[in-house]
Length: 163
Image (cartoon, helix red, strand yellow):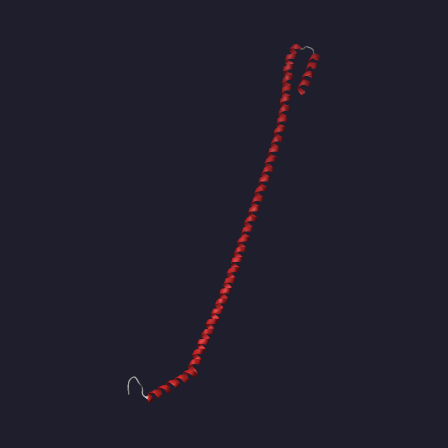
């Protein structure tokens, strides 16, 4: 017997043992192995589907969050613009009120000044007329000796002063 070529009896028992192992594996081993592989394959496929669904949901959430963020920014911009309008209207209203108040104060001051000026003019005219009469009286006492002449001159002077 040679080392490279086996004996026919050995070959028969090797083929028979191989056949028995093959039948046992075929009957019990391969179905269990392929079942586990199929289960694993189904689990992986299910995980991939779930991951795809999660990715789709996350993409939808991202789109929704971007939309909400955009809406919030637009709303913020509207609020800022509205507050600017309100601020400007308050400033304009305050300016108008201040202008009206200033005009009122100015008009009151002008009226007060006019009244005081008028009173001062009356007072000055009164004092001038009193002084004129006093001066005239002193001058005329010396010149006019009769009371009739005095009265006539005084009436004439009073008429001139009141004009």
